[in-house]
Length: 403
Image 1 (cartoon, helix red, strand yellow):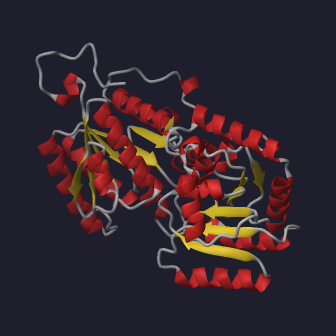
Image 2: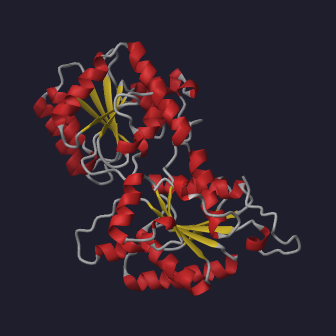
Image 3: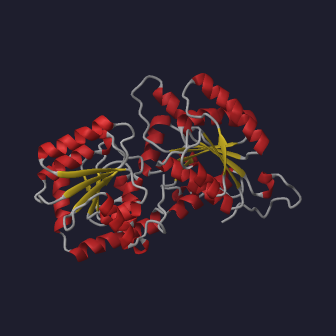
């Protein structure tokens, strides 16, 4: 797919008229999370489609990936929530928009989105947002602060759960919302292309015992991800030989990490905290069961589709994005959030399944990901949003929007 439009004048160098827009994505920093990876993926798609991909952020470890994808980084201190800094950043972004002849600003996080929205108002360029999270509203004025993510000409919702939340909280015209789930790179997350050497290397690095079933929970160490629920479930499991593997960085929550280790020891269950992992496809292949035990709804839950892409049996909590990506009894299992008894029963059920049944479910799960949740589908749908706001294609039929 490209941005070209048959009606575009052939004798102009203006990027919008020629159909090759300049897209500026804005976010706080380029760490290693799902928002950041999605930004890199779209930088690659914009470049491949003939556009110019710019990314404004405070930088980070994925900045090099933006450049490798064909994009260009613009370093700006966009992390601050200070109102004065937000306005200062708006002026900086407006200057970038004018200098780079930006056509579309795509905001992916709230503080940078306020700066980006103000800059878009000043310069008259198109403003698009992706509503990435179920943002909290516990503090005064928080809904107003969050509302900038619903101010785009098009608001991309990463799940039906998030689309419903946008409508409930912000009351915008449903015609502005585009449902575009996150995607997984199914060439990277493909069990056929992960060598035994990669899997064995991780097993040795983590000192995992041979011949014992592994139940894995990927996710940064924070209470709402449900690591404690999994430990409680393993203590209630009928299987006493299970090894629990918690994959994810503590991100400074060392007290919580130590509390998890103490809890596991007190309950007599074997749980390993292995930290962050740079080779998640190999890590997932180690698991007999992959668990997403989040006690708060995930806006989408990329871990679930990554595990399904690797044809792993998945158990997820029955809310948020996972309720959409896991077909109970078909591509995985769903259990009530925070229910260690139900999670234990589900783990026992999966571990007792004959290998051929587990393999068949894994194949169905991978098939579902290939059909609905690939990076390529996400990229193509987002490019269509860009083309739509530029007037290069008409809006989709309401029945096809998914909202």
